[in-house]
Structures are given as C-alpha cells and as structure tokens.
Length: 139
Image 1 (cartoon, rainbow, N blue to C red):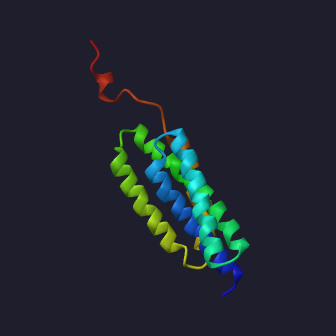
Image 2 (cartoon, rainbow, N blue to C red):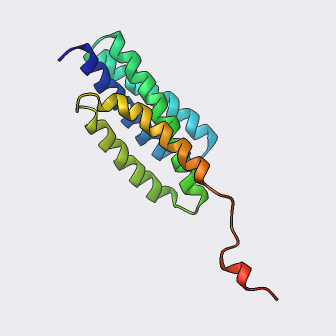
C-alpha cells in the first residue's frame, strides 16, 4: 500500500495503546502522566520494531493523543461514580478495539483526531452536580 498506510496503522495502534493504558492508569494525575509516557513508548516501539522512524513518530503521537483523550473520559466516568475496575475493563477493551481498527486504511488517522475531540465534547457537556430529587424534599 505505501508509507501512508503503515504510518496510519502505527498511529492507530498507538491510539489504542493510549486508550488501554489510560483505562488502567488514569484515575489520578500521576497515572495520566504515566499512561501518556507508556503509550508514547509503545507507539514508538511498534513503529521502530516493524517499520521505520516515520511510523515510530506516528505511533508515539498516536499514543499521546489516545492517552490524553481517554484520560478525560476515564476521569469523568470516575467522577460520576464509575468503579475503577469496571471503567478499566470497558475502556481497556475499547482500546483493543481501537488498535484492531487501525488496520483499516485511514482509520488510524481518524482515531487520533476523533478520540481527543470526543473527550473535549464530553467534558464541555458535563454539568456540575445537580440536586436531583433532593430539590423536591423541601421542608
């Protein structure tokens, strides 16, 4: 196919690794930093292990974008009452799916754009805590 395809595959694998690692580690700010660094390392390792420096650069950038995007989703889920184990399992499985979809031409590039944009949109839509039914229980 060409270099554009292999770079896209490495970007998508990096994004998938970032989503997986963020699901496992992003419960705290330190965990987010570790997830970003590890995801970038995985993306670079995949790129250099199978291809060349262009793919390594794409994989590293994909890892950073995937981890940062998924970290926002993970932290929002945990803030709203999600459990760490359940969130890690669901987001981790999503990361594996994201990495698998990277083998479809152009999808790896789209993943690197869509996941951070999705995290930003979800963050904007997130409201503050609401009173719920407590507002109806006035004295």
